[in-house]
Image (cartoon, rainbow, N blue to C red; front, side):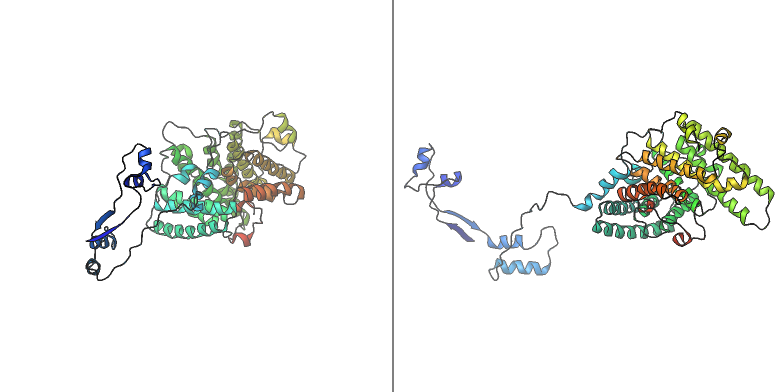
Length: 481
């Protein structure tokens, strides 16, 4: 046992009160003036077991004690060796600002999945909060983290965030290969691939990387089969998936399996529910890729098959009729006559998603211009054709392209418009192709695509660029090539 202590000059009462003592004997005057009992002056001594103290501080009690540690404690207890144990440093607050990587996800969620009060209940935004927050698996969580880091980095021009997003993306791809090798077609895997589709829209790492993800999503969806949509969240997710899959088929100018009857929205909805406007539009949108593919086959054939031409004509006419019926339900008047459009008295829809839907439908019409000219089919009703009979087809195409720009400007006028910007990448690319010979009109398209979609909202895929055989590295050049 070792005695520790020292003689102190202050009385015990002043020590406890932590005040200065006047050190008068036998009792201090300060205590008397305060009406307190002075405890007097004495040495504060205590006896400490040095062996126990060293034994308790040389190892962590939560860890197993080794033989060498026991021997060391014994030597210290016998006075053979002594070591001063450092005190644990007190935690210090470095900064009240949160770490940057904790901001990636909430920032991306607020941008890609905002609550837009202008959006009606029938039409949901293209990128849903469920896609980002419904983390059904470890793979999906990795994909969301990669997307969030990269989106934060691109929109804020943060190089470190972009590098972190790239590392997370590589890790997510490794996990995805393992998941697909196990033939996993659950919703979590579909949502993971959709996150990677959005990622490639943001970073545009390679000219065809986005197309590969779209195509992979289609193969996985086809392997899953036309299962019923069980929940509203699942319905919205599969709506967005159908859009990506149709774009993939269209850019490769091949049939899309979604044009089969078993994939129609009426077959997938729960009993008693009816398809909304966007469901019907996506059903119609799944058919142009097949029409374009059949048109290519007929045009390339050495001998024209009249039966195949007639079948294609009937399919195309049926598609045009369904599309104009959809316009009447909007309601909207589709025409290439500016006077007729103004006299219709129908303003642009206040719902931004309806404007996006109109832009997609007009892009669809522009993709069907060449097949319709070959088959002798009018894109517009006869009443509209009488007023525009003196307008050549190029002028009509240009008018439709400028209408797409008008829809895009109206849809992107709000702050919460990133999800709409992603859906507008395809219509704006079609519009750019149709006005590329007019510098004045091209300037308007360039502002929307480069300044708004690419720079403001971070979707690099939406930047104006030339799509050809070299950039796509496919042998086919997209909807219009």
